[in-house]
Length: 66
Image (cartoon, one colour):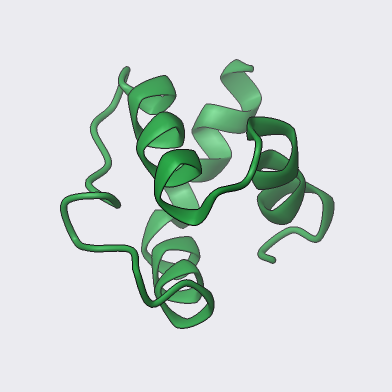
């Protein structure tokens, strides 16, 4: 999980932009990234877009950047 968190941290602005394009219901508050609080971030996004954590992780990590 640490490697995934580092990937998110390094690429967050790009990932955030793509998420906002794909899911217009996401707000800046939903996408607020804080180091060490990745699980809270994932929970907010999952709840808002109605996808499971595995699906959400897959969107980011399987394709590199959705």
